[in-house]
Image (tube, rainbow, N blue to C red; front, side):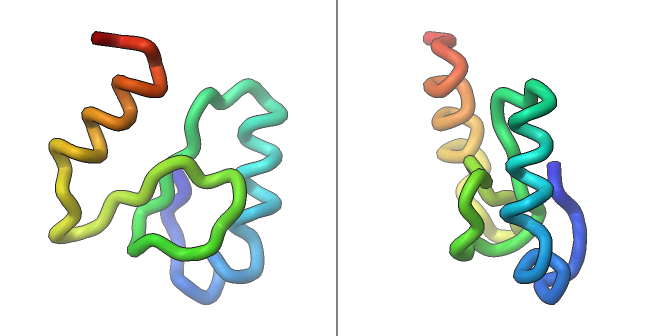
Length: 64
């Protein structure tokens, strides 16, 4: 889970997400509204559809 400010996301989210995946992270979440951040699999923010986020996460994990 990446938790930071929008300014830092713009500067570092792609690199950090890549490092997390290289270290074995299966999924990378970002605390904030969706943006163009390669390597981020899902976004969690106030007002998001939590059921959809969790359902998509379970789908990616192969859990039925």
